[in-house]
Image 1 (cartoon, rainbow, N blue to C red):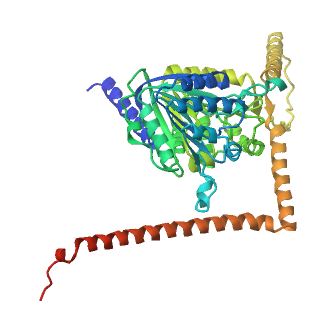
Image 2 (cartoon, helix red, strand yellow):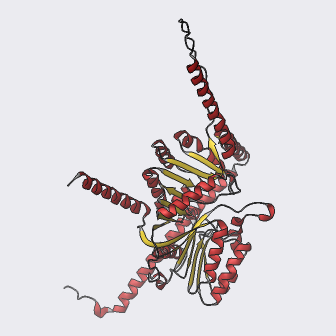
Image 3 (cartoon, rainbow, N blue to C red):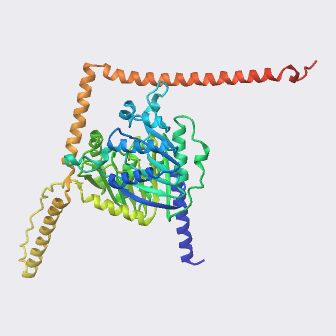
Length: 503
């Protein structure tokens, strides 16, 4: 075997190991034969949803964090009502916390009256306990078991902005997919549906609808509380990236482990860039995010803040051939507590499109940079020998060098104006100040009103205790029911079936 053959075999072996690591980390195999279209913002996602729902002929399965009682929410509800009245199977699973306003206003009752099945994920209950902290953060629509929509967008007019007030739409990314990946998507929906009531009927999970129809290989990563599948995959991709790793995240509060992975990648020469909101719909998260910039910047990671009202996308693209789109944010809540859904694409064309969009987004972003350290002059001993007069050629070269340095400095200054870079200190100081003031105010409030600290802790402990007691009572009931069934079975068998006694 020559050296070229050995190199080829080694490369194939490494690729097999990488594929095995990705599959095991994500808990999802790579499935080929899919047709995928990228959709940007509400301008592309919302019309695609409306069109697919209006054309549905068999079934609609929706798993959605926010379903708002607003103009767009009512439009989608009306489409679903008409379809339910026409006999189409409608199953809607919404998160109670994300959709609490719609829930409390009986927004979903007309949909139920029309024949649709509607369930709320984790509504407040006596037996909920600490499980109520975990939410269903997925954004998934399945139409006729043939078309899948996955994104960071919810069914809410918030994503459309406020044109009357001059506020542009939120920046977000989604996709439409057809092909074999519909099978694990339906299984993921069925798992969430069964966690809130009776399971989905088995015939809805048949795979005869998901024939190969494209050339894209993809994984569907459906995370549930405590599985950490997406966290393992994000860490693995940060380790595997060789040239570029470009991340967009709406609520960045990464763990020290993930921050370290990004730092090591940047130090190893990978072009790591992070795009996050400058102003967020949840302001305190943006404030905390800024406190994590410094170690990233010092390692060579480039950080950008979106200039618009909100960037809500959760995407990643690595080396121009791997990409991720979905609902998972880079924080512990998404990684460990919530139900999330993401599509990981291994397709150079789509990854290239997503990379181009990332660069386009950076044109509407401000780069955060470290403030240059002021260099102090270092005293040097004066040489006793007489300084040699420079020749005309040396003076010309020195002047050219000085002019070049000046031009470079002017270029950096103009670049900062054009690209909107801003030193870290201007963002870091207000972030730390606001966090410090908030903690001090909280400390003062607890000092004057101790019940502010005691009441939440009491409620948390009481809820957990009552939940465990309710679980114990349920187990006792099951045990007693089994015992009664066993006794009834013995009575039904009668004495004739008893074994003969030994004398």
